Length: 242
Image (cartoon, rainbow, N blue to C red; front, side):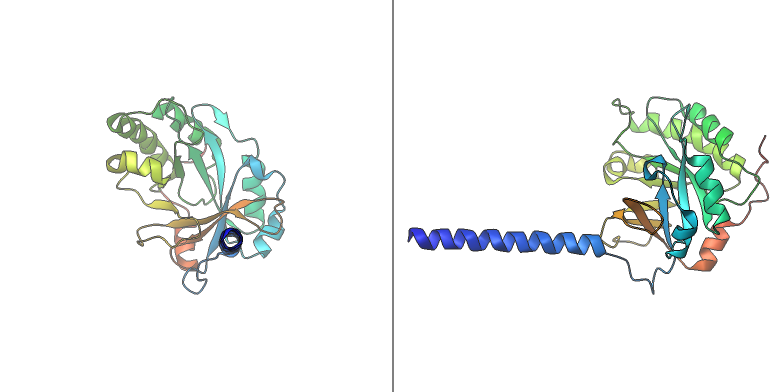
């Protein structure tokens, strides 16, 4: 009886190990149906270090959303170089801002507008709203609504495009009523989103792309090349950089 219990325990451990290994392999190799989502992109910051953008562009990457700013005064030190090199490699490029809870939205808007150039086409500006890495104090839904509006108003006027909101599940649950009304960038790792109300889908946070040493976020666009071209087209109403 004792030996049988040991055998059953060993078999259970083996089965669990196989399930974990299978799940890991699935996650690592997961990619959405490219027939349905033919346009792939990445989002990056200084964490990706030196990037060979020509190799990236040759590895089935059509667009890149690059971290520009955070809060009221922080600038990602790789932004300018990444934006310039990615554009030169032929990618559709855009910029994102990490929205902090401990700085007024107006201050954050000024930071983003002062850093991101407006003299060439860009994808719509992106606002990243999440709890991880943010200030410990969390605003009430009403406070977030006011500060987010103070950010979005000047930014959308400056760039002439409606901003896209990247919101993690936890933040979305807390502020669902305050983040409606803007296009969404969904994060759903290795699982297809349950609805189609999104512009970008981040499906992997540990992907691999030629030209980047290490992990990178992988995304697909809702739509094909024509959709990407429309998002990237110059906005005539955008104001020029100072």
